[in-house]
Length: 209
Image 1 (cartoon, rainbow, N blue to C red):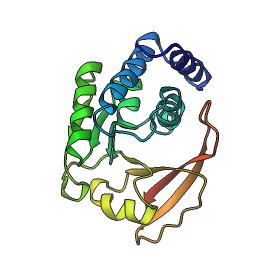
Image 2: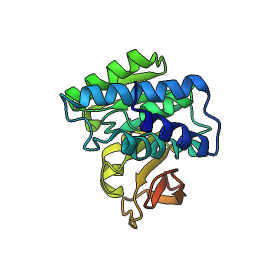
Image 3: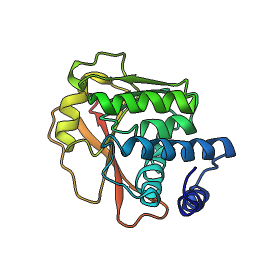
């Protein structure tokens, strides 16, 4: 069970999103936060210890990108950490095939347990370094501030094809991209309910010949 204040903030934040979140999904988000904090007492999964802060900085922050992946069939979350944004997006889109890529063994174990507890049949967990993971081209390759744009693309270019999108969740800071063959297609401002500070989403694509 979440503390009453955190539960209230979660409900208020989900209500403020520009899309509907049903009762079953709301319960899954609450169960995720409960599990995260049980594990966080033993393993350092997130530096954000306050549950109410986790609501805005983790759950709502990740859900803000949902409108930008609506047409995707597959998604790879690079450096997923505690399953963010992989699990949040998988809860909302059961038809989306999600891969959570996390090389840290304890964090990967947590994601697997969360997948089991939340009964997320559309998530696979890969405990490998991104450079070593070989997979069919992913429609969306996403990361939550894993690295600067150049580094992100250098590590993940092999995971996408001409139709793929690389999405990088960042703060307000400007980003440059100098990797040949890639360009920043768009920079979307993200509106995150109950979160102070600016968030942006970089949409990076291969340049067409």
